Length: 611
Image (cartoon, rainbow, N blue to C red; front, side, top):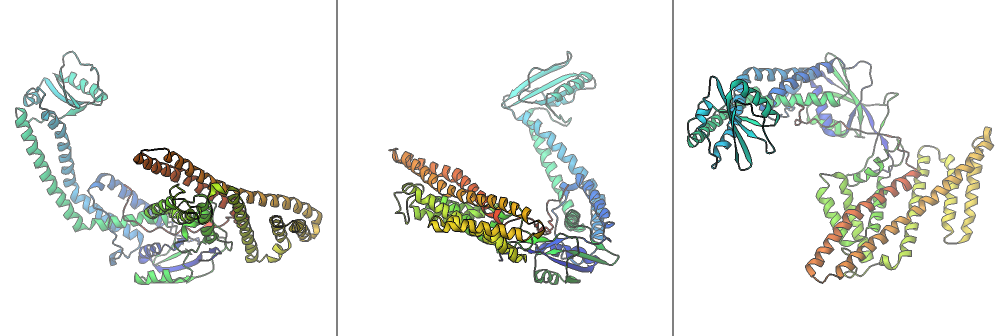
């Protein structure tokens, strides 16, 4: 954990071409590497080969993907240590061999699935006990001049345009409606088109169907069992073929190739070697070297100065408990190299502001539980935990538990009874936050080697601001206001001897604008106390409603619903206000957000292959 943002470190790694795939997997697994190419000699000739391999895979997947097993990560196997294009070609050979052998099995499975799907509506028709159906066996045997049809109608189907020589019988059976039709073949075909437009589904009538509903149902059940048995046998043959050809590993290789094409830039590749370059957040290099050694890969690694012309990504080095607070900084961007990383300070300020505005023991506890339950699925909600802890602490200070003030004695005060105190405390807190922002700006000047410039100019504005703040304690401190302004004006003008009067005019305008901004920013923190009063007022309103309900179960229900509304609505509003104060009253003093974020190479996945 450091207060200063650092640039990522440049690394260069040489490895054998056949071990490039393993090296890329290993680097991605560290989560500490961002690849970037910087030479004119590139692997551009390799990428078209890989994309062509993926195109062939997707053509095969459109027809056969549902019959393939899940991809398997086989990167630890020795045979996987080969060049990416060789890895892709080997995987495609396995898939082509599988297709040549499995095609008859797949085709038969499709036929069986279609036949079974066709039996379902016929089984539904025959299973309706109240329908007076003709003998469907004779109905299915109509011909050669006549043709017969059976349909399942859509629920909203109205009147039908029936050809004159077609006989129809519409029967309703519970939620479904059925239609039987008999007529000349040509007119039945035209009737098919009419019913297709009405979203009717044709029911297949097998010629093997025996006479009588009971016998027909028995035949359908027997046929479905036979289909299931044959389908199971074919599936087992496919599974055996998958194991023989190791299709899971082949699909895992394709998944890796897809990841490589999507996330890895063009790398320098020769006939025997591959050159991997980029940035790392691993300052010591121990993480990368340890991962490569454990994978038993051959490599040469060095850390060097970054080539000219490349934009260095910035790394925020914070422990896990502090990383959720990086969200505030990333809303504007990331600090430039050498600028302040305010995450540690935000970790103190944000919970304090949130808890002050949302002070309640019970509601804060609900936020803590919610944050603990959802932080893995939604990492940003981890901020609810420190916010909830601060809300519980201020709840004890204000004597509030689930909006009730008759349970605890306040350790400090009740907001409703001391509104002016809350507003004054908010102003004082805001002034402290602004001063911290000004100090961080000064620190950045010192880090950048511009300490003398800060003392000559910006220090005067700090003195003026402190003089205005000190006026609350005594009027003599107001002398610091003109003294600080004069300090800033003279220092700014003296730094530009060739255009002294122009610099003086600019300094006068800048000083007035900056000082007004500082005062407005300070006054904005009054909203912290105002929202604390609003929260207390809502709690009092809910308490008054509950006190007026004589039926205790209903009163408890009202209290629960009221607290839920406060937690959801006011908790969101208070969170927004906290974010606004940090971004536009605190960060504006020092954060330039001119850095490029470090984007680590994502780890390849063996799931979610595009079809």
